[in-house]
Length: 261
Length: 290
Image (cartoon, rainbow over the protein chains, first blue to last red):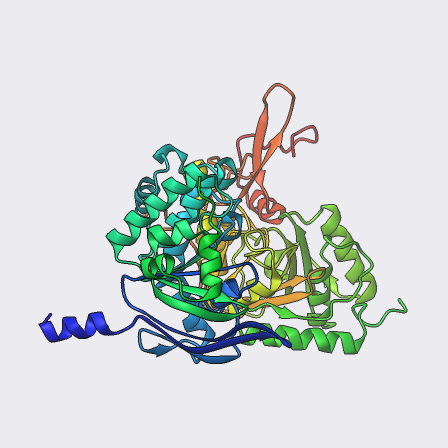
């Protein structure tokens, strides 16, 4: 790779969002959201409940259709893609980590089957290799190898969430959407999960869009931060900058609301 | 003479079913919805198969009906009598003499020929049903050829049992396109689905679906590279006719562990015995096990 190619490779945004709007009838889901996400970058989206962050995420991931605006992934117009293409993207290049692991896992299928599903969906047909990869990924998310044939219903909440992450990352996606991945977990489990996520993101060079209302999560994980209120982005910038020197009144309120132990 | 229209259903209904059959034959493996009628038998007894048979029957046809391979079990006897009464067609037990064969859970051992129609009774036509309960989602999966989930089921089999333990209703891929449930036939019969000279029609009455395999269609049983598909049967010969190559039923003969294995296809077994083949327990005397 020449220097010039390297330059363009790093300066080309992976995801380019322009004027994204979603309305639920007369109500606003999210309004005129624009941002660029570069390869290897983690973008945090914070805001109170009902501020439109989950709507934004599901529009980006293609679970809902945006009313207006453009989404370009790697130079390709996502909204103009055929459904076949979009769904293929959804199981290869993209991953979606749900807040509730039960939404993202097949509860009736063993841990190994859960991790292997995406591999089989993209055409893996060798049982030994699928199982080997599943084993490897369970190890990476710190689930003991002998739990591979157990169903997720036999796992604790934290393990289920880690299993969901393994299941999503097994096909080496480039872009991961996370909807409050630490919601519903107790703080010590949260801390371990965040530690794990930080390691994976750094090792694999993932681009991540992470929606949360937990400022500690974005402080740890996110490079850049977007603050939403009533469907609009009220402030965005580097995470430390936004959290340490909030400009918008709502961000100031948000930052000052964090309880100090 | 009965007061029924020929083959029970009225002509408009038969036309509607024939349209669905033709569409099914045009798109092998695709489940065509049709307006299934109530039949004078309960769901699960072959209402779909009976409607398909009724739509295909002509007065010149010879009908054979089998249930789990046998010509003389309740389901087979009652459906055969139903068409004797309502259509007055000739019936037979000999596979090679039949022009239409309605079957539940088996494909006859005698190879089928061109011009024959094999009608399957199907309880649940959707192969993905127990993996994905949403009908909207399974339709989308068929539309977009997203069949990875089917392999998850086979993966689970191997993980739990060390081999693909699915032994009936084994999923197949038709002409490299649609994944299809071949109805609950044993996987021993799966190799007979492919390149079969007969027309194979599948009718699901309660679920209101018809699908089809035209003659000589390529049908591949799904598997893994390192766990290939195997058509399994009991490792015995038939105790009555000595056949080594037919699918066997296990029959418990006493409460001291005694058992015998006999052909599930009764007509095949009978014709072999008539031709002089003998199995381990065959005794022609009246008090014999036959």
